[in-house]
Image 1 (cartoon, rainbow, N blue to C red):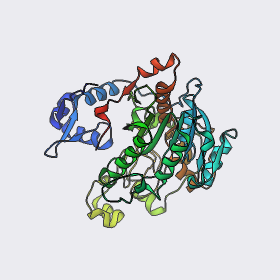
Image 2 (cartoon, rainbow, N blue to C red):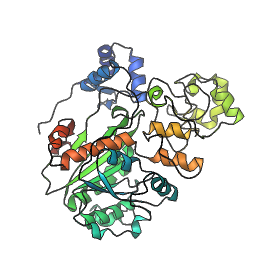
Image 3 (tube, rainbow, N blue to C red):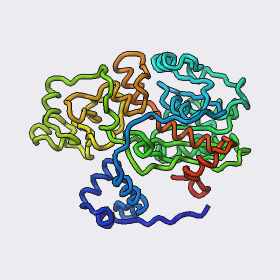
Image 4 (cartoon, rainbow, N blue to C red):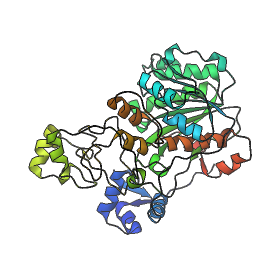
Length: 419
């Protein structure tokens, strides 16, 4: 595949192209609405194609929130580290058939059993798992394995280096099952984890197992998710599969928090202490700690006030007309506050679920803190849906394959390494 040369613009040029101030461009960049890369002198550079997409997105009206679904496909999935079922539900909504789900968290498996009692889900450690009986019978093996450092034996960077990690178990089960495609999902930070060596070992091991590997950071806010959430998606396609590796293409629209929370059901949630409530009442919609009087800033932030970094998550109130900030496992953590745009309170569990694209009838098991954690750790359901369509385009030999492939990005050999 021929490599496309990008036209990169300075922040001043980007501001001129968008018809806004330089400060606005910088603010949009910090909010994740447009992305930038670093030049050789550390300056921020903006891809002209990215700016064109931003103009197109802003020219369209806000889209309604909905859970996406497609027709069934004859493709089977086993998912490890499945959590509360965000990816599983997304893949199912894309038409894929769930054969087995595994997680070590009892509440997460209880959540799945409550909502999909016919799914074959089990609370078990992957270290105790044997999937030999599925060999050659499964199309997709998926897993959001934790990001763990490896113990390197010199500079060889081999499979033995992964021993004792959950990726080691993931690779062991891939070898047992031999699926047509492997789907790995992780945080963006895996790209640079341990100076890139962690991801290098993973991709090398997948190649040793007989797979072509590609990865890409997907931005959920441009894939029908009302949330600025980036996830690293790794696809490994078995060498006997002839399809190119395909990834979802970003849409020319976003879904606002206002649309996501429209008529959201009432639910339980955390509450602020009296002292914190008094502080948060001063924060305007879309604002954060810098909107407080300096005396209150110092008092509220304590030692953090004198530390570096923007600390933009502190005392943060969300904005109605933008996608939500990335949800964490707790909406009232001091460093990653997620306050309702209008009411002075943390987001409720049902609001959390809406932002992660779970349907309103998806019930969660466990305590309030467990529910927040399950939702916060989940893959957004609609992101899982778009990933599922990409898998269908790679594996499905029906006429729909060409229809799907036309909407997806093909990864060439020159783009497989991002570090």
